[in-house]
Image (cartoon, rainbow, N blue to C red; front, top):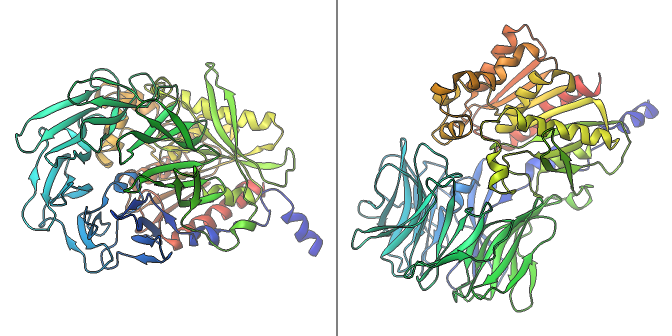
Length: 618
């Protein structure tokens, strides 16, 4: 019996995991940091078991204080990261709450929270205090509309609408005079990734001025950041074909790239003296940090294997806080000292056993798609390699214009520790490779990108790593869509599929989803009424009759982006086609991804049992 058990655990897929599902589920996650005005405290959001709270780190004592209590903060999603700010006097915070989608005020050391505005319709986010702290600008969202609004920071009075028209607005920021705001906007029927403009609003005169305009030019401008003295505006533009940081002189109109190059830059942050900017540099699945002065001097702050984001200067400009993670290390807050040119870790978010869990670093790989396009991806290989025997997970990202970088992905580490080989393709349309690469997904979504993904299977097979009869498609959101589609269009290549919160029917999807996803479909596939056949052709339900491999469909019951109805339609299509080898799971209380510890544990148990039954034992 002992020999039999040891032989089984030595088989790829049956390895005893060094990184367990329990470790995965118990690990806290944190978001981008921000400083107190005196530089003593560093605030950051922390997420655990479907709840996010704002934490305060005392740099003098090392004490960590939980600030929010009765009214929790919003989840760790990008739109909410700018929804947290501290007043200029350091006495109160404003933050987005997951409780009701509203903005709340709370003393900076914690206590009773209160609403920023009187009860008003819709949700709010992206709050930022005015330079004198008397007002808060934010995005008010209701129905199909969004607008920039300003309200008194004492929590009294009604908000004042600033933006005009029915455009979709984003990312408001104050100029130093406290009289002007700058924000981004775009046609509310389009996505912000393609054509946007930056608008300056004078609250006193009521005048508006477009500072940067990408409309009609297939150009995206974003991340407007006024300089400390208000004379200059830094922003990100892809007018060159690559996202680069630009600097505009407000008075003269002179504008140009700060550090031009064929690389994706973003997240600009001014030094307090206004002499330069820190920004992210996205290159070959790594996201580092660089500083460039207005005179053109550049040096690297973070470059190695990992993903750094959310740079934030101390008020005196001597240090920079930022969030850093890698494929073998969870996200933590780091501080860079400009005098010593060295970084140190400020938080220690981890769980016991992680250092000895046998985590593996990814390898950046490349392959060529049938039309000659080079595709980049990340390859994860178990430490104990048995050539030609490993089951394979093709892990497809969502968006579909997202990107896989060297970041902490505990699910990948869990499966690799069990003996699975994993590849994460950055197929055409992915962020990080310039505008032309991104635009290659237009009109081709659901076909050419799938060929890019299929190339990953050929790559690992040619490397002699995998058993080609044990290939599994796996992904969430747009990756769940790809999983559903791949099993129907290339049925002979897959042993199974695991589709998480994935789209199954483009024809019905626009009536089911939120306003974010609807224009994305139109941008990539054209208007539905003009391209109905294409919508049907690219829908996984249209290929259900060809599916041969067992499919597991997992949905969030409260998901508004990809409602559970999409998963139900996929299951119904399989039933009508006479298929019986499928499983369906819907998690109550979960949205577009899992946050509850119980869900994470059950999710991995379900998948492990499914893969053991349909892949490892057949």
